[in-house]
Length: 77
Image 1 (spheres, rainbow, N blue to C red):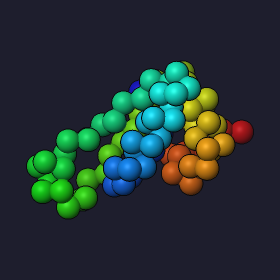
Image 2 (tube, one colour; image 1 turned 90 degrees about the vertical axis):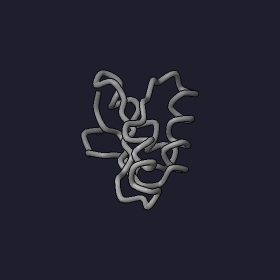
Image 3 (tube, rainbow, N blue to C red; image 1 turned 180 degrees about the horizontal axis):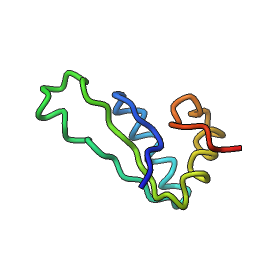
């Protein structure tokens, strides 16, 4: 699994997750429930991760959808 987006914005995470799901790309949100322990102050970012073998495809898709500034890394050509 590889990080695709790291953010404190739950709406961005949900949106990206839905976009990827529509493309048939499995994505998992790590640290989604950490807000219960942190008191919902947004101190811990959530991580959207995908399998290594589809990372490049997922990153390109999110960039095309206008979310390129949020994609971790710049391995996509």
